[in-house]
Every structure is written in C-alpha cells, then in structure tokens.
Length: 134
Image 1 (cartoon, rainbow, N blue to C red):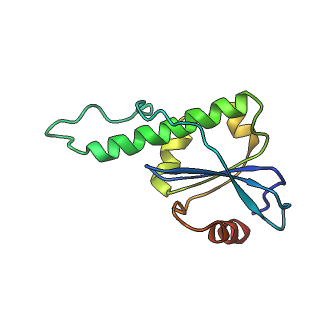
Image 2: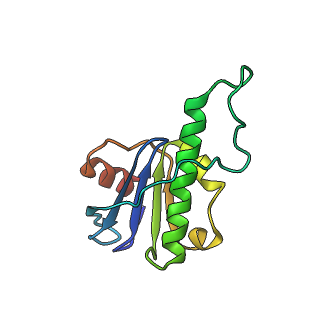
C-alpha cells in the first residue's frame, strides 16, 4: 500500500488505539507515534446490540463495539477539523466492520486505505512492513 507522506495511520482493535504519522514517503514508510485524543466508548454503533440480557449476555463485545464507534467519532472530528488530510485505518476485521458503519463522507474522502489485521501491540517496524506489503 502506498501511504502518502504525513498521512495518519490509525491502528485499532476493540480496546486500544494507536496513531502514527508517516514521516517517510509513499514507498518508504517511516511511522512516528502521535498522541490520540481520549476515546468516548459510551456510544453503541447504529445497529448495535441492546443492553445485555439473558438472551444477549456479551457485555465485552458491546464494550468493544462502543470503543470502535468512539474511535470512528474521534477520526471523523479530526477529519472535519482539517487535522487529517490522508488516513489509513488498520484494524482487526470485526473492529473495522464496526468502524465503517460510522464513517462520515469526509472521512471516506480522505481514506487512503484500510488493512483488516489486528496489529495493536505490534512494533512500529511490524506495522510499517504490513503496510508496505498490503
């Protein structure tokens, strides 16, 4: 995958988010960690699960879906505020599916690519290699 210089790379799963910026160029990715805003995980994505009951006891999944929605909201805000011009999202497959539900059309417009892999907790070098191979 070609990642433009200064693109923001969001690496997420249902519990963690790491943000990076590409200080290299499209063919030679060099990621630098950048701070992420606090994530509001209280929202449940549209079409999300209803409160837990005996028929639907999976609170952990509900929390992960809420976190995914919170990450999407934060990215939408940063795109709309002009802070993100190019964006790559790397997320666990289920997390990526939840995030897609909340993409603002402006976020979709700056989205350079998506990678459906869980790379949270991996080294920067491993993330760079995965992006270059995608």
